[in-house]
Picture 1 (cartoon, rainbow, N blue to C red):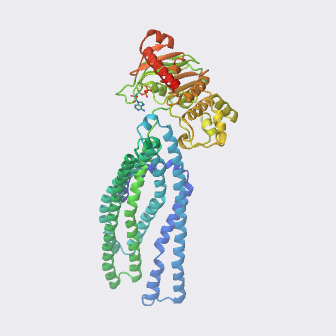
Picture 2: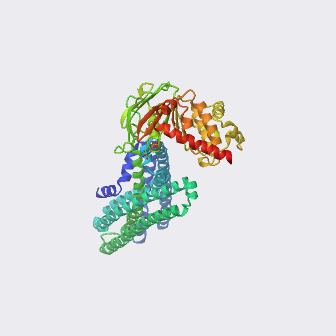
Length: 605
Ligand code: ADP
């Protein structure tokens, strides 16, 4: 009992993990049961192993007077055969239990990994904002992989060893309890030592696992921003940062190994003490006739192999501690619930007409620092509203709230007269298309990249969307047309082309609401025109929220909101705002002058 609770204390993560994933494990009850039976058989054969030898010693070599057996050679041959048969059976059952457990472990963890990935994707942006991508990748790939590995290389042997230990203790107590007691007397010493060290191993291993997450996160960040890293010659800066973290992780790894080695060596010494005691007392019992030589042989053979499980416990402690840390990291993600989720009684959104109303909306990513204050406006179906104003004052945040990537801290957003929180999240987002400044294309074909907008779209839908987005022609020039597979992050396409694919993706969705977040920023003039024309066609019949710095583009909107410090400071049509002579009018004057200068510069070139 003390033993079980001590392992439980040292490895809380692993037990939490087994409890949390019992529903997955339960699905493989038959296989698990079969493997366990094979495991028990394996333990039985392990216990049987020295018995043929005992028979040979006690019955053939030095039998008690008057109890000599006939046909000595036949018995000897039988016993020799038994040695081989027992070893064979043990090998077969051990193989069966290992394979069975490996199958269960792999199946369970493959399902867990898939669910973890799903869950992670559903977690709110507020969680992802505060978590490093590389660290999450390590959790899905590395931590789950480690748990898979450890099921077979540590959990299974540990269970087998514990059973072997119990079996051997029982048999030796039955043979001679005094001698068994003597052999077991070193166990408490071992337990004290191992609990103390395994706790420290566990702490170090956990830290190491976290460091590995940080190393992966740094690498992932730098690699995904490799253009910027190279452009700013930051290779050495990031390289050194990576090297420092890598070294720290290595230092933890060495510390864990050192502690493991210390535990193993302590067990070696204790094993030797136990063997010496048994030899000293056991031989005296044999000489006194209280024990047969064969029984002492069984004793010594058991002793060697019952200490071995203890020895390997030291070895497995490190691995189990790491797995427990990995398990905790996985559970930590599982136990997070998305902030944005379907409320009780949420309904499937009906096809929207597209009337949007913000009612006194306030919001802060961190509640102490409000980003939006008391925002109220209404957009009629099919209208376009442009959000204008200095950077960092909350325009994109308004778009994010409409997409329900975050919920307002105060006030509410309605679509067609109902609060968006009363719709199921998926059914709400399905009716919105988005084009952002930074278009993310996936490493898939052009066709698939467009079809991500609506997975059930037909080939004709995709071509129509590409035509609307001014993308059909350049797609035709790609080496394999629509089947061309794009490099990661779409590096094989220009900015304007990427943006037009993104517009095609939004177009194929045929959603009644369109959110455009700086869709033309960073494009050259030729591309800008082509993108703007495509966007005009796209937004013709949809309710559109446009965040932009491009005043010429914004001036075409039905009305304009000028956002400053998270508040709407001016609102109206382009003409009315110019007439009013406020901030928008001043910005527009500056914009026109720079625009004219640029044109003059181009003309004189
Ligand atoms: P704009 O679109 O007007 O440039 P944003 O809506 O992007 O402004 O940002 C408004 C403010 O919110 C800024 O101060 C910005 O730093 C902050 N902010 C934006 N996104 C996040 C985020 N994910 N987490 C925390 N703060 C954010």
